Image (cartoon, rainbow, N blue to C red; front, side, top):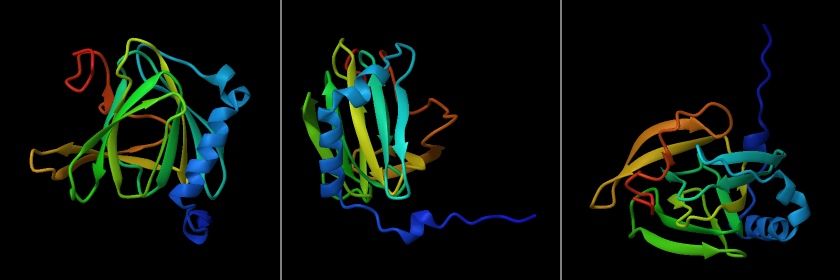
Length: 182
């Protein structure tokens, strides 16, 4: 049996967060690229990989009212995202636990970039839908989920694939302690 080793992730350097921010802002302004594809499912947060190449990939995420995703990283990828519809609330920190967690309210046109050590949870804090465009470099393969302690230490709980079957354990819905609707 012959196996092929995919070296694309290790051979090409990741794009810096500033470049990712420029990409995601451009896509966010181009509603013709994403608007017809956006979907909002009341049962679960929806996502679609719009594009992928060896340097980065682009995702569209639909957030129904009060949905979110629990504390996670991006498996070693740097990233950026922009809100193109509605509002999001990000609570973020560094994976090494240095520094306090901080909240950022993001409305339409707001964008954030981050390096590979970034952990956050993101929720739609409103009763309206939200949509966001995300870009990751190198392309997103996994997400590690964490539990935080009062002293800001993070304990890794599990790793899930970015695309494909997920456990759903990291999803925040109305009734979840981190949901604004709770």
